[in-house]
Every structure is written in C-alpha cells, then in structure tokens.
Image (tube, rainbow, N blue to C red; front, top):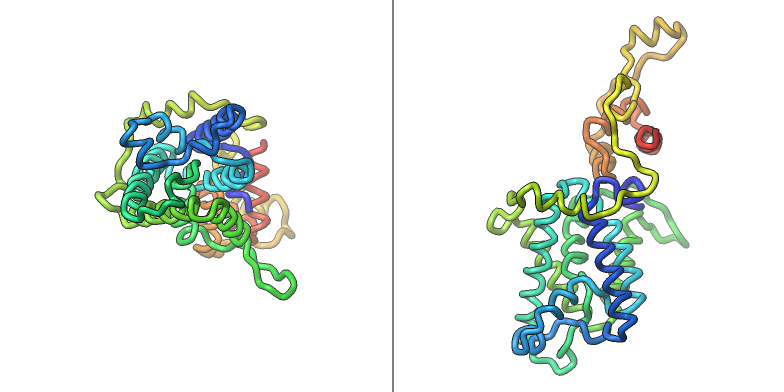
Length: 294
C-alpha cells in the first residue's frame, strides 16, 4: 500500500514538506543539536526562541524517527491528491498550530519533570493525518500471516505505533495532540475545511519543488483524454470483432471507485477503468497506471 502512483505526482506540498523535514533533520544532526530541538514552554515562550519552535515542526530528533516519519509523510500525500494542494496547505497549517497549542497547554498543566522538552518533528501533521486515514481510506486487501488477519492498512498503523512510542512520553504527548488537531479539522471547527489560501500561495510549492523524475505533465491530444481508457460502444466492438463479447456496462461498486480515488486517480477516470476491467480493481489499477506512463 503506497498511497497511489509512485513519486509526488499531484502532491507538490507534500514533496516540499518531506524535503524540508529531511534536510533540516540532517542539518541539525550534523551540528549535534537534534536532541535539543523539542518544544518546551520555557525556550519557546519565556526565552522567545521562535526559531526553535519552527525548527521543531520539521526536524526529527533521531534517525529512526526520521525514517518512519518520512515514510508516513510520503504515504499521506494521498490526502493532498484527494482535497488538492490548496486545502492540504490549510490542513498542514491548522494541524501544526493547533497541535502545538495543545502541546504547550499540556506542558503547562502537567508540570511533569520528564516532559520538560518534547521530541521534535512534524508529529502534529503526521498524527492529524491518521484521523482521515482511519475514517476515509478503505481497506483494499486482506491476508493472513500465521493465522492472523491483516489488512494493507496494518503496515501504516505499525509505523504509527513505532513513531508514537519512539521516545515514550516525549513522543506520545505530541502524537495525542496531533490526533486531537486532526479530529477538530474533521469536525470542521470554524468551517476550517472550507477555507482556502490565495492561489499564489499554494502554487508557490509547485514552483519551489523539483518535478518528480519520470513524470511528464499531461497534454491534450486527439487521443482519449481520460486516462487513455478505451470508450468503444457496443456497436463499434461488434463491427470490428463480430465474436467479441458484449461490453461490460455494470456500474462499479462505490467502494472500488473510492479506493482508486484514494490512490490519486480522478473519479470519472477510475469509474471508466473499472467498467473496462469488469470491476476488477487490480486490472483497473494497472490500466490507470499504464495510461499515466504513456
């Protein structure tokens, strides 16, 4: 389960965030300052180290956290493909700000000596993303390992647990605050899901990020525009091939369409691919991927 076509196609904001997180983690790691970047009430507000507050949003504290964190950020690019780069930018800003506020409140109220500094990294964004992941991403495949039933979503949950408990209390608290922020976004507090940035802000990320290798922008031609999925009518098929079976016209299941849309494909294109593949979701996925590579 990789969240759709490989690379950051149609996900420039995710690409910029992943690059920033990786670069800043390596930079502060080389300087030996990774362990001191975590959010703390004293450094961020009493000493006004705002730079530290910003750095803690992107840079992870350790290499294992970086590996699992970037894997999850890469997978969650699927949400940018679903709602668009503009709204996803709002989601990132909302998640980071609200989760940071919750973290500061928790540090102030708990007064736990072992929580004087939290682990750093985009925990707010990652764990906010688990709310739509849990509710909106369907299970596409199930299999059994040693008699235990596992779905394709299980690997994401395992990576989540690894990241959540990576630094014990110092990472659990930011994870919980991120989940709370994601829940508020899903509840549409202050109608946040309707808010959009001006177009030039979202397009900034597209200009900032390098294009994904091997991906060329779609062009309009005389071919079938919608994914190159054949759209022959029954008469055309019978005229060209008298022994061809009748065209499959049954409406695809909504769950199958939703699964393909969650992978980053257009809804109408996904529906046509399913019809052409006789509602075989694997075959439809191959059709869509092949059409993008052409």
